[in-house]
Length: 67
Image (spheres, one colour):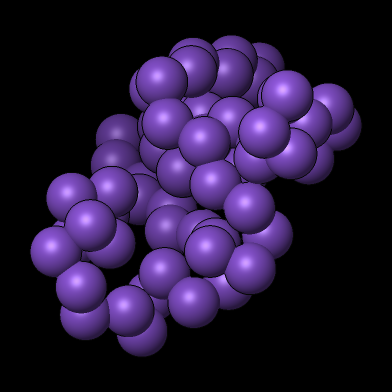
């Protein structure tokens, strides 16, 4: 989705497609890379792949809340 770099640390929001929840949505996680070590942190939101694909161009209030 989006990646931000600063002082050797990369932070990116991503959708974890390894396992869907009961509602067939995938959890959104924050990926932090530092010194080639990745850590994933859940943010408590879930999206379908279709919702994720249209998120950058979506102008609704719900989409703005997720960004």
